[in-house]
Length: 231
Image 1 (spheres, one colour):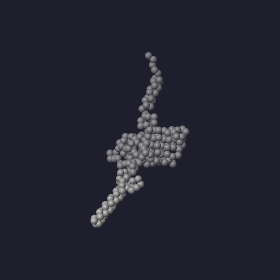
Image 2: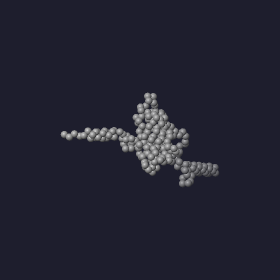
Image 3: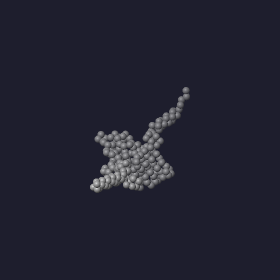
Image 4: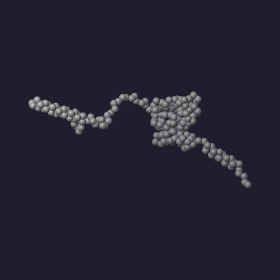
């Protein structure tokens, strides 16, 4: 029975170990997130993002984030970012954008979150747009996926931590003050007040008819009375 050289066994073992390690290590997110207080229900938390540049021909000009459940656009304010870039809220998150960065330069910025949700982790789905229109979509919730969303792991909430009340603008504008109004007439009621084919209303014609009948009755009464007096 032939023996396999020890050196060949060592190479094979090293290759197998490397394969296991590559399989076990999750794919690194190319947009990374961290926080100064990564704890559930923590308040006024500064969350920092590092959007790595992936293009060799164009620079990043915009980063758009879809917020996780439990954080509304009204709960987020801008911290700091690339010079000249502006922050704006969207229906489901926010955008940070401005002059295109240099090719290969990563976009680093931060936001302040009013309160983190009571969860084990929160994922910030991110789309980063380059000057040439190319978009990197870091939106997969599976950390082992090809395009994983930057995900922040949270410690358990402090024993005395409680959810704060929703931001005023998170639930919409306050209900308007009730104003008393006179109900509009029904179509049937409105029709009774209109003239019939441009003439007088039905009520007016009724009044005229009653007046004519009274006049005729008065004339008949006068004629009869005069006839009785002559007789």
